[in-house]
Image 1 (spheres, one colour):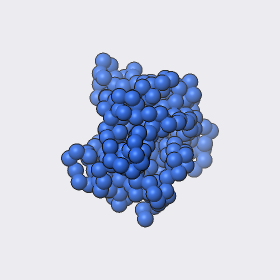
Image 2: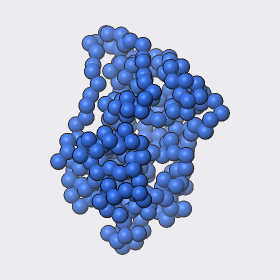
Image 3: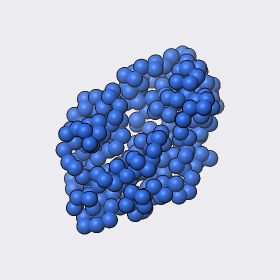
Amino acid sequence: MASARTTGTTERPAGARSRDPQPTGAWPARARDWAEIQERMLVPLHEAVYDRLEVGPATSVLGLGCRSGLALLLAAGRGAQVAGLEPQDELRELARGRRLQVGASARTTAAVPRSAYSLVTVFEQLPGAADPQRVVTEAARLTLRGGHVVLAAWGPPERCESAPVLDVARRMAGRTTARDPFGLSSPGALEDLLAPAGLRPAGSGRVGCPFAYPDLDSAVRGLLSTGLFDAAAEFSGLPLVAKELAEVLHPYLRPDGSVRMENVFRYLVAEQPGQPGQPR
């Protein structure tokens, strides 16, 4: 069984100062930054969902937009059958390097072994999605009747210390179509996506997900790897966006040089009506 352990970043000695961030815009490097720095920040969210739905050997899990696959590894560690879909090539290859079955699209690949799953998760994809409704409709299509879809989004901005940092993405994107990461954080926003997809609500929750980094450089690289700053980097240039990120992160620097921001994420559990275990 694949291990749920991830590669960590190198810690600097206490009191050491970080060098100026020098992030790269190349996707392979950003994919590695996601896998090595950022993906573990959402582990409390993944575990809370799996605990609530009692994920185990009887569960088949599909991760939509699974990125490098940590959430799937955690489900596999509970005995679940797992697969994922990830459109970004470098992230998909990292997931496959973890011996996960991950395809680019359910409609164009045979890399995922089933046509429908008892649990479909959308943990990371919605905040940056151009068309969230389309994502949820696709998740519903891939869910067995009686199964569940889980959607996740940032909590209220006033509960997230990363909100001023994420605002860099909006301010530096000019007139491009950059999405507001908190666009689905208002009351009822996630719920509004369910009925058009044929789903019904079945519970929700909020989970604390601190963003903690050993130093400023890791914080900048980790945040850039989320994809939320892509439009800003394209419009204003990556070096300028990285510099601005470093500036707005200074209030969250600790005396030992580490960075920590307290955040809240919200998840919504939806049910696919019908006889459990039957295809949609």
